[in-house]
Image (cartoon, rainbow, N blue to C red; front, side):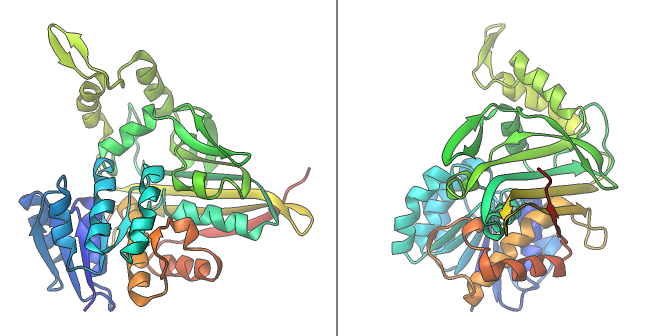
Length: 386
């Protein structure tokens, strides 16, 4: 019996559970959360006999180990702050783990030897970005004879953007806020480099219904480590509608996004925490409808010519299944990965990110599997004039 545990039953976790119960390969799905109301809502939404629920504390390693010991595979849909703990717990439990969070890769990769010894595969950052963009970047490098530059663009944006920020939260606010303050990891000439938050702003044009957007450099996660010796320059950018980054940049510059507490009338308060409370109502749209945009380009030499390889995805809210595009494009890659591990299509061990798994002969089948689930990614190849 193939048993999969889903850690976290928010929007993404519930989508993961809904997709897993449809699988002919998965026999049992256990949804786990620390809040009974979240768990009840998930199971009511899924409404399938394959799915059951369990309450557990996610800030306690032993509690996570306990729910994973009888599982074959787990999918972690947890906040960034709990990601490393979930990785450690899965290894201790001898349970394969697909983690949607890609941050702290350098810390996670130190667990690789222990994971191998426990016969465990941990796949960090297996959503859309990180996730899909990772293996598209690796594929671009793989198809070129000599790779000069790889750029990964991705963003979740509202279908009906509203002022003043032209954005709505499609996952955790914690993850969003980090984009405005955290230096971004990239790779240049075989070295890891840190680029300033909100730097490298540029206008980007997408087909309808998106139009003109802006992108700034954000963290390239594991690809900066794994691909730095295969390409001269690699970085990732996050997309928003025009005007959003400028407004958030002003807040960051003025200190509204600083974490260090300040004294206000004798009370110590974090400017960032206060800003989050103020901003959250401004980061909600009038509907759930959203769009996920993605473009990955790889430039370099192929067959003696300078070529540009480009993958693009414009994915919209799924009205038929009533799930956001961000939930779909984040959850489905993880579900496919779980099925492939269960089937033995992927049999590596250790801490192995998507760009080291979905390459070679596995690339096209994964792309086709995404397409069969409603996620279409186009590809084109152009000769670049000097």
